[in-house]
Length: 569
Image (tube, rainbow, N blue to C red; front, side):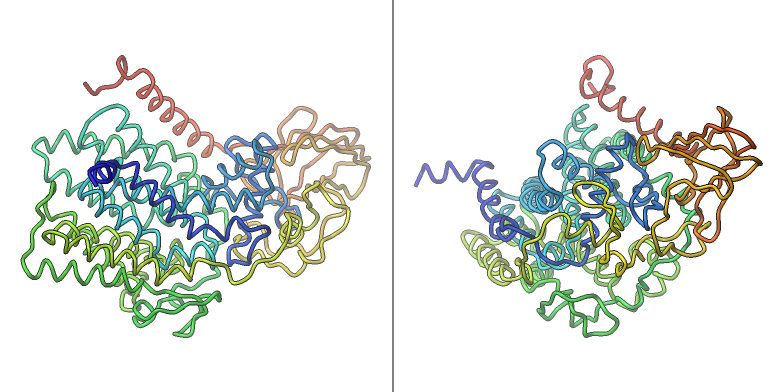
């Protein structure tokens, strides 16, 4: 018995139990093949990240194979971090795109549970933190993201939300270069991982930081340290979010989703339901928006404790508990149609799209509150109640953690659906019939594109009068030789976007727009001409790259050469 108690005094044992519990959730992912989910274009995005890196793009911006090979600046706007990691798996382990994506799904689960446990340990006992991590793992919205939506960014947001708060607390507890750098990279990682989650969660980080600052004697210095690290986090991700905002004017406004069609009804948040369908207008959605019976019970019990006058007997005051209760109910408000006036005033709809994304916050805050229950009840009552709540979370939601069906497919199954002529072996000479039935509505057109192409161009470069020969050095780098009897224009069948440049006979020339698709026109003089076409960083993106590069170098210098360069002592 003494040995068991000693073992339970070690975080390693609790972390091992969290890992074992995670296996219940991710077990279906180890089966051969794959399963249908809403965000299946994630596989296409991963493939485009691989293609972008293969072409030498650092950082990757241009996805060359979408829209009948006219390309698109996908990673100028779409969150990149999970696809960096997936590309690493694909390149260095030589595994398929499917398994690279499945591995991202798999890793997100135990890592999120472990990080959440470590965050709760800042406030609660090991057992309380373990129970909270179990509820966090077995929350219904995670099952929706994993086996219904396949929402890669939101799955990894379950990692970054507690990670940002954990590193923030570490920094305020001990001002060291390591903690400063870790908090900065956590903030940057949250933004790069899923910009929509960052929009939702960063205000909470700010409020959480203000709460901590209010508890410190050295308020001004604590504020300055947190602010400096936070700004570094914004700076290292600057290469992504600044061009995404500054160059948004070059794509057509609008979203295929109207947020006012996707407010869940209150009963949908409370009453358990399950389905693998889509989010629809009205109460008859095909997917679940339930908060979770256990999550609701945890919040109800936590509120009851405060109404009965209970007070925390542990390390911190009550502010963090009040904050999580507040987060829970504010999130419910933003998921209710009565918050519609705020969705109109704030630019929430164009970014967040679905009000039910706030289920991320109800999952987070309710799981955190279980620590209050275990640590406030005297004796075994708290532990017993927490065990029952954790077990109820497992038994009530374990059945959700499985796909609707599984089938045996390979990478080509997806590549032929999402691209006109790409397979796992490279470019195909045959047009994919499956692709003709695929809509790329999630990609807004550039402002120069009046309509989408409906077929592959015969050649990547063409000229109406004259002869042309060309070669592709990469998907973003072309060379051509043109012979024409009079001045003309070379048609380059790629959507124009800032960053495309053309030189003719060594001199840079302005690129024109070819309607209706918005591809590029390159003027050439009469006679023989040598043309070079390349996609690189625009001035805005180049500036943003330098800011992120400089910030990253400074942070790494703090970490590696901390005794000489770090301002902490």
